[in-house]
Figure: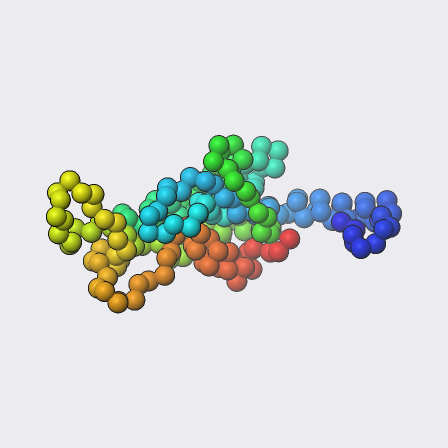
Length: 190
């Protein structure tokens, strides 16, 4: 791209040089995005709107497919969320697709060697953080059981006891996966 502050457009030799450079990078690298999919169920304890997120490596630009590396499941289950690498994924075909910001490039060698999967699989996953409040007696047996924040073992927090920070797919992606890939020299800025 040319400098937008200048009214001069690049010469054809400058454009050709930049285009060849971009093509060379696409020959050796895959593009990486963070797809945002509107498939997250409403969470009464965490009301801000969230989208499901992960790391998407586009391995086939023509078909817009690649691999989605993410954590999936929920924070109510005893085992929490699980890691998954989903091949042949096309985020744009989902009726729940919201957005897909570009975050950089990875070398094709790092992808095909399994290095990306290895780094991401080793990261902590979101554990159990919520559960039904079976400890509180209900006056009316037909009343719904309240959802509460819990410790990893499922026990409720005592009044005034500090609670762990929320850790779901968004935090896994932004606070763990992206930094881990950058620190390992795998994810490069674009």
